[in-house]
Length: 121
Image (cartoon, rainbow, N blue to C red; front, side, top):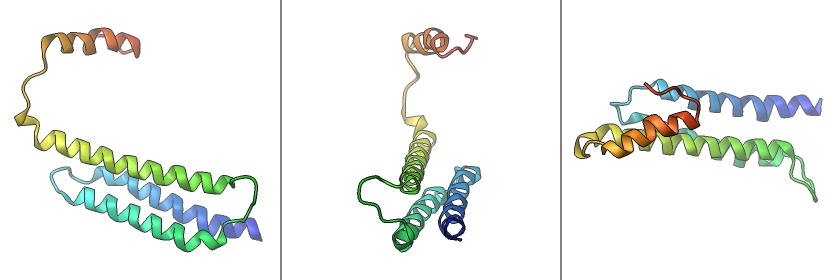
């Protein structure tokens, strides 16, 4: 009975929040609501972890695997928010930047593409 309680009360809601965070990339980039939506998800996940902290097993020596899962999930959600901010910055300020220098274009598209096994065009 106890393992099923962990699954129902901790893992399933956590997986739902992570899935909603992944599907938030389908929101249109032109709206600024994507960043605020992701920030609300992170805030909700943090509150969820604070409330559910009493249900986590108490151990003295080792860190429970479920705590590692929650920490990695929170880190991925924060990385997703940072990626959204970075993409929004690139899209809305791309007219302010100059063209890519030819040497950087050759370096990335020809040489580094071979390193990561992408055939050059």
